[in-house]
Length: 152
Image 1: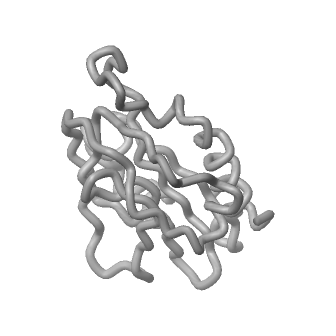
Image 2: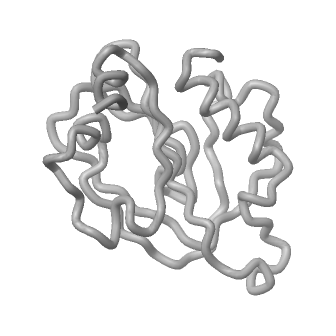
Image 3: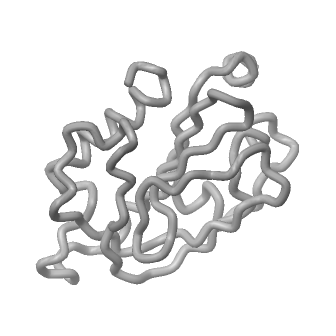
């Protein structure tokens, strides 16, 4: 109830995706947090894909070197809900799939979804650095949190 009250009053949220977040378990559509999330479901697939198409003008990419982007060995294929309050903004893609998403249930709100799945063996993907070992990952994630909290 504290988090819901915070969100109802315009607070920001960073929501990370994992195997049970949108894919393997049924989403609790009655849970109050669900109305702040634009995703109805997200199927998980194993495929090595590279991050791409960063929205470099967005504040989360401030001081982030995106000249060489890393990979992920699994991805989520989200299905967006119908009749959303606003259009979700895809700030970074993984292959053709959303990887970082910004959504606002109400004007000015900052809900950030990170659809990262830290699965897979880097040894099986030689030369394809996984995102969580990318030198810019911690700084990018910190920027996402700062942006959601109106500090960036």
